Image (tube, rainbow, N blue to C red):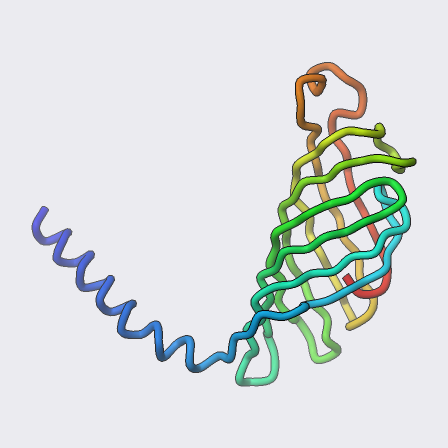
Length: 160
């Protein structure tokens, strides 16, 4: 038992001593990651913005952004937490996010005035073109046995 504790302490001290070096090697800043205009289900036409912690690579590629995003559309709104990483020289990116979705107005393939929670996968092959696929499950007391309990989300557009 003592050996395990000593080993854990050694690992913790090693990580703590390397952390300043690792952080200094990659510049980090808090800023807007990306904005966008897209169309999809259930939000229909929507605008979005993401703000987060951007880590720039020293080699000129694989920049990363851990972000919080908001998307407001004709059929609802969504708040998400996610992470993206650049994947090519054209500024393309791939990422994942988890979030909550509230439908209102006239959502596409979902009921109005419902809350959902789920996850999405984002792929932007080039800087301004992208798409997203997601799976959300309805929250609340009326979720059991109600129609359209699950929603597959998708969007395509410019930016995020």
